[in-house]
Length: 306
Ligand code: CP
Image (cartoon, rainbow, N blue to C red; front, side):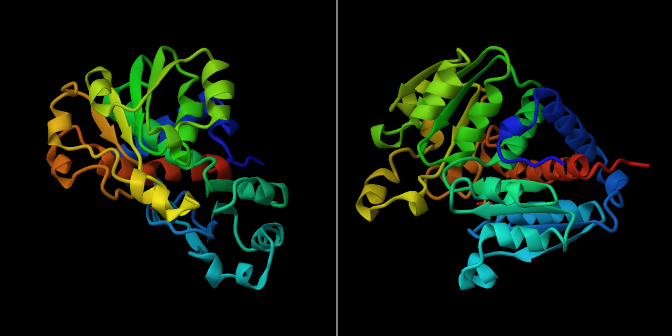
């Protein structure tokens, strides 16, 4: 049985299999509409979500399966003090696969160690978000045609942004990937990503505070929200939250075929005027999330089209 806690739980070959399947699902979703009949997905969300929870649920429903779960810890027996380990032991008897989001780093790993069904990490604190990474890889592959030979700018909250940590971990496995890490000093990428992921894999990267200077060289600009919920002090959040605002003036500095991605939700960091720019791909990206999760559920439940 497989769990997905970090993007590295999938080999490059397994990741590519999932992306290929997801691209086929996107082309012909009807072909897959019954493959999970009789199967159940549990969504155990201890932290708010729109895209991840609903796209997981849409994915299972699109595959002909059913869904059950909770959308906040307050609506579950966690509010009475039940542990993640006990909850997943019980849910293992109710569902065939579980997607779990939790504010604590490592919670999904704890669940996987106590589960008799596959556990998918739908975001654990500021740590990892591997299904967002599958979504991001699918978006880049579908719209750019490749996952190699790319200069990728990651901008905003690189310290707490779990989507960034997971995306870097996955992309360093492809040839000729270069990162431009754009953040204020206080929100720089964590040391473990810099040392154990980027430097250890000998991946070229630069760190800068200057988005405008970086714009002309980027193939992908991945914007992120400053993660208010991870700050210890409101003053710091207010000081940093509007440091980067992508607007049409900055888009003029970019390549004609640069893609703008964002895991969403957006707050102020992309001006709504950018939505009309054909390079703005973040709403398409949210749709790709359904196909990526459909493919992942199929692989983990080992179901195929008849
Ligand atoms: N991208 C993402 O994780 O969005 P949600 O928080 O809405 O699930």
